[in-house]
Length: 69
Image (tube, rainbow, N blue to C red; front, side):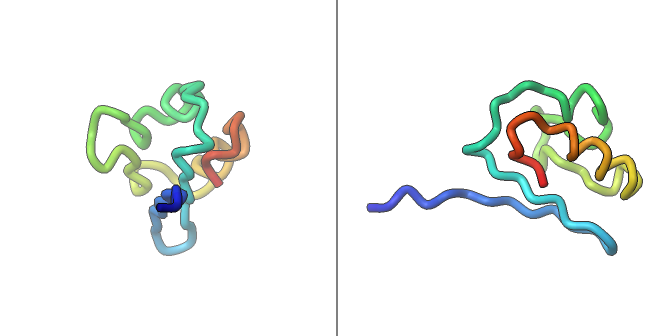
């Protein structure tokens, strides 16, 4: 059986955030920058509507592993 990579997508009108859990190194930069969006204790853990598109783009650019795009 193949190890299929899980890819999660979270969308709002003008933006789709893609998360690749296998790439994540759990540095927590996303949680530190936008705790109102990223909460690993909740499901879904990513609430894209809790930040502006610009805030999300700025934070995603800082993801050290590239798990968020």
